Amino acid sequence: MQYQYALERYSVSTGSEKESPVITSTLNRIPVQEEVLVLGGGVAGCAASIALARKGRRVTLIEREPTPRHKVCGEFLSGEALEDLHALGIDVASLGAVPIDYVRLAAARRAAEAPLPFTAASLTRRALDTALIAEAIAAGVRVERGRSVQALSRTTANVWQATLDDGATREAPTVFLATGKHDLRGYPRPEDPERWVAFKMYFRLAPAQAAELARASELMLYPGGYGGIQPVEGGIANLCCVVQQRHLARVGHRWENFLAKMQQDCPHLAMRLAGAEPLLAKPIAVTHIPYGYIRATTENGLYCIGDQAAVIPSFTGDGISIALHTARCAVAAYLAAEPAPLFQAKLRSALLAQMRLAEFAADGLNNSFARAVLPFCLRVWPGVMGVTAKLTRVAQHAAVAPMQAPVEI
Ligand SMILES: Cc1cc2nc3c(=O)[nH]c(=O)nc-3n(C[C@H](O)[C@H](O)[C@H](O)COP(=O)(O)OP(=O)(O)OC[C@H]3O[C@@H](n4cnc5c(N)ncnc54)[C@H](O)[C@@H]3O)c2cc1C
Image (cartoon, rainbow, N blue to C red; front, side, top):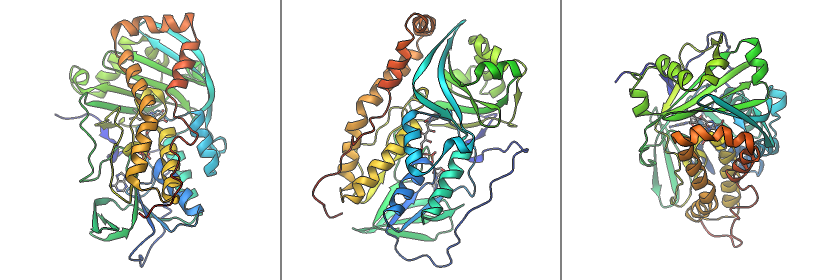
């Protein structure tokens, strides 16, 4: 099967954008052992590294990309995500984030809108990840970029060893696993039975459409999936969508055909994209998204965070918030000497209800009857969107309280 798009790991550049400079701390001589190794320098990995370094811990962060790249993500930052980012010292407004006040739901030939029950924003992942890595370096984290972790194993009961792409190793008693959508060999998450495929493409919308989209996040429903479009910094819009592979097969696995089919099924999207200019040569894409997954167990000294801990359905726009939340909780647990297996089990119970509700709602979105009636319901009861948004938010406050008595790890 030949895919007509670039998978995320081979993410594309628009050609018109300058790459951010590489801010790699060159380590001539790595100490044999670090206090903490963080694997993956996305949202969760950076957040955990910053918090640990600020508490005086010696942290090495390993990120496989040499510079932040576009990632498949709707780039919606919920109120909770904004609070966590603020606490980390990230001022999204100064990075050009667009405030989002409304959510619009479009399905079949109907669309309806409702105000969001919290302040939200929208910012490209490239800008966000760049700021987070810079903040980690400023906090004193040793950042190794362009280095991919190939394997993770235990040398002794108390020491983890990460093997990098060139065979070099890094050791530490504690590891934070934050490789996001990408599983490390030996630490797989379950199969994704629906075989979801996600795409992201940037567009420059026609002026009238850009004006209508301003400050809104639009969710569009179609058979086999859903998509979102919203403005991001720089006057452009992000279209991010998911579809089950069997529906993609019906259009020959081709992005152009899928885009045309989405517009046919959801005329609201066709209206938004009329006269729009695509800004990437190809969409970026990612497969294998185990929606609904929550990690139940781990080993001593291995804290799993972000998408390695839990994967919430994308329509909630809550994945970044969960990544930040799980990083914060894991750092608190580590500092309180809470064993990783206990932390992971408590995190699971704290997230379970929210995840199951989000899954239930996602199943509803994928139902043809729901697609027909949802925009109508939203019109007569706009509060339903607010209620759904609130119920699918992560609980922020001490949902995973560290144990009182310090325990040897
Ligand atoms: C279609 C879609 C739309 C979404 N839309 C939204 C949204 O609008 N709002 C929202 O809040 N969430 C959204 N999410 C979810 C959100 O993107 C993730 O939940 C979030 O990025 C998870 O953060 P993370 O730190 O776990 O992973 P990431 O941010 O993906 O970071 C993982 C990092 O690990 C690195 N890495 C991977 N493997 C290795 C390795 N072997 N060695 C070294 N480094 C490695 C990667 O390069 C990457 O930088 C969406 C997800 C999808 C699929």
